[in-house]
Image 1 (cartoon, rainbow, N blue to C red):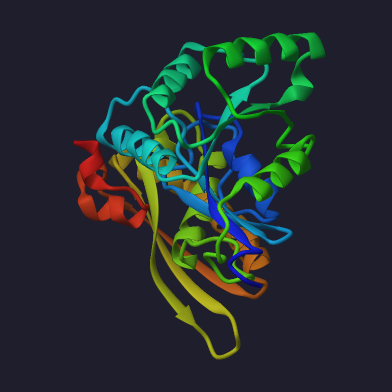
Image 2 (image 1 turned 135 degrees about the vertical axis):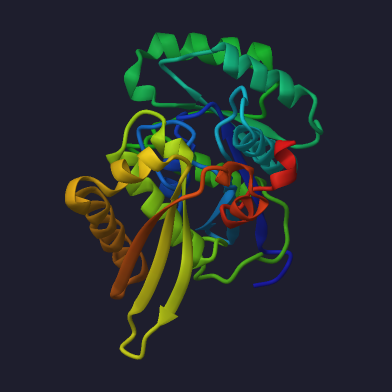
Length: 304
């Protein structure tokens, strides 16, 4: 391959929480590199997933959902989202078809208007299977009147509708140049962080209310064994003593179920045996500790 025949670049996925960014990323890459749950604000770090389309390498940046920040962690997440957008070669704005042009979407469009106008922005209307065609057409017209989008795509990231056309357009629109990552790499996150994200997803699915947003998971140790398996030690940090019992569950059943589900997915992802060990610790002020932010890929200073 030569520089003149290959293309590569970064594509930022932005939108409100739960718009389907992680689902689209996983669909495009063909593997699970970003956690997907029914809860909002689950993507904390800028997770890069890498897709190959013909001679193009598309590096997707899945950003946290953009919302009105309240806490330091919220502010760091929103700063990470806009940081991912400003550094990208192409920006994709995801809008949920059934929610339409919400106040949150309007705020994002206003912010987009202040970015470098040389960066192409495409509109992605997601979850099109939830509304009628006439509603989709009216929404597309309304959104394109609000911002000069380069292209508009109507898709279902979950079912795959329209995703091939989007991938083809991205592949032909990225800058010419050599690939940025090895051909067989699908994400630029270290396995320690991917493993922590998988465990955090299982916790998010098992727990309810505010607890998932007041915990974090860190991979404390990773040992490669001679038989080809990996021993992984992780710590689940919670912010209140009462949350520790909830995460553990009666007789430890909750954390055991989380560990089993996370281990199974991690083994499938890595294609080999994994021995996963979980501990739960209370750190009441972990959301104010710079070290914890670094572990989950966020900048502590962005929360100031």
